[in-house]
Length: 148
Image 1 (cartoon, rainbow, N blue to C red):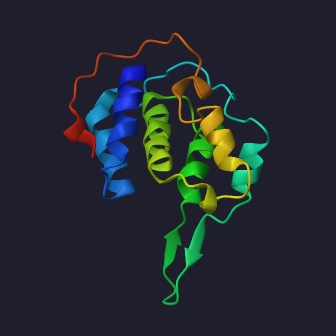
Image 2: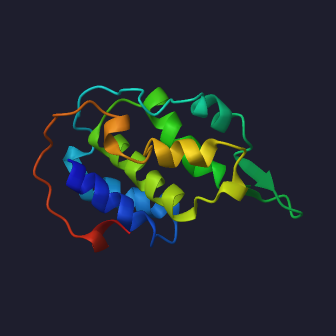
């Protein structure tokens, strides 16, 4: 599962549209999207990072009244997913996707003190922080172009 997780994470960097890319991923997974992958773990919640991130603004409204995601949205989705969704293959890979977006755009100047350091030091993009180890997944074959 780690190999697939890493491939999805890397593919997120070249994604033009978050929602379309996630929908393509779900379609590619097909019947395996809802495959249970064990139990969530909360190793990602170090140093109070989850509460600190969830307190940040997720959206802004521009001068035309259009709601836009902030960079915080991607990190929030990584932490929100295990709290509100079951541990399925799609949800784990959704965390990988958001983790790729966060890693590609992570700058200390964009977040309050300590968030970037915690994220990097504890490798909060890694699968082991979200799902129990040792669970196998169905053999799903697809290339990188399939989900970005």
